[in-house]
Length: 199
Image (cartoon, rainbow, N blue to C red; front, side, top):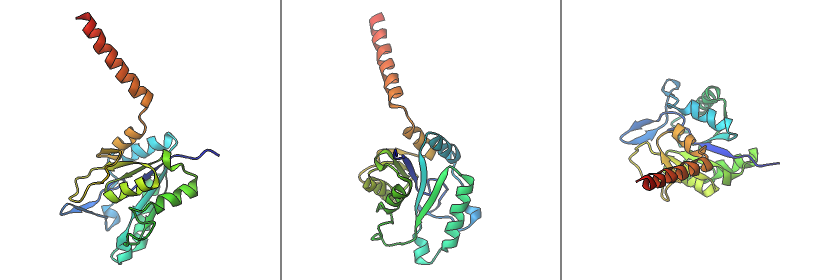
């Protein structure tokens, strides 16, 4: 059976808006604060239509710290799955210790999904808004996309394969047709040459 390709999606800052305080992102604390970001609905629709398996992978360490109930995180995830049915599941790691193999920057959640859904990680993408997301994707062997939300914290190092500002723009990059792009460049070069000849 042919392995599937996937787009792994961080939750806060990629699918839904973060609460930003002093330049740092925090998860919503009530369902009223859960706002799906502009373009997300269209982005997941386009990615799913192109044959990508969509899987959320979210660090939720406040559960491990005891400041957010696990039931609330699960309620938010269920709400998103109802609003964005193209997403297969939203996995979460509740530990705040980076030694946990499932906590990003470790690739455990991505590796688990690959085994569960038969995914080809080398043909897959990780989209996130923090350095740990990008590192998890890199360690899993995926191509990576960084959504730069302007937080006051270190950027990915090494840098992501592509940096942008929205999931819809990220989807456009994932779905670009290399042959079409090459054709456009070739046409532009031809037009430049023709202009020179006419001169």
